[in-house]
Image (cartoon, rainbow, N blue to C red; front, side, top):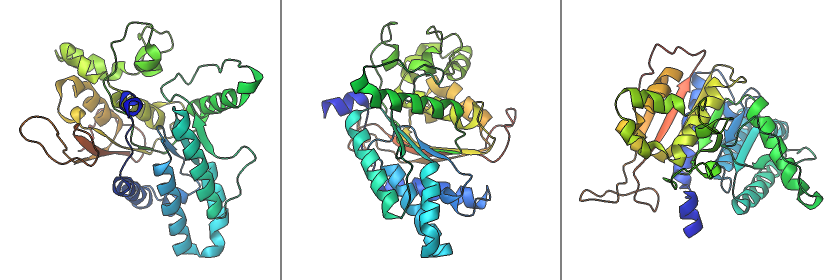
Length: 319
């Protein structure tokens, strides 16, 4: 329990997962013309904090059920095989990663998928690490871990992702002192130079400073904020971003109105055309407590950030 708290990792209620999957699938079919939703060959899906694979499993079952209903049993194995090639997951902790890899493998095979020799695209990696990093050489007995690292780096740098979904970790971490960059935002906050001069998090923090909220930014140095910034970059801004995309996270909801997050809200509205917020409340402190979908005291919200085409930075997203 203490390790989970320190990592900001909490298992997501299945009802929440299924709701996000259905909302995204509806956008894929009704707004992006992907008739089979997640099972469409042009849809690449990534969970950057996969945990034990709950979101990936929900995507598999939802997609394959749709294929079965629309095209019959005979079409399922081929579509399951294609989905396996378009489904990615990153996880930092070894235990959840092993469970996720096993569960995703089993689910795909149960639907008749033929997996490649190297298995699924669930990788043991730090999502927030630079996509330009070079996997260091490791001793032979650690080669499987080194191989995972190298494959994940290729995904970060070269695979165009249409959908990024999940429940990123959220926790205000220890103070940054230059020696703990891997635990305080990694590449997102510190950039490739380690000094933060060209870090992508600056798109969140600089507007807040200009608005006079620099003193509040300590509240924005949170794991979930880094994952939001990374997901927006990967889906909408990286060199592989094709234009349309969807990011949907359930995360702490402090970004909805906190002064420290005004730059985050501005950047989200510049990069997207439409954003839907489902504020689930859940404040466990103070005099006005409310129920939470997690066993935590932090209020949470589901967000779906959507863009159907190329960016229009000067036309703020409707929310």
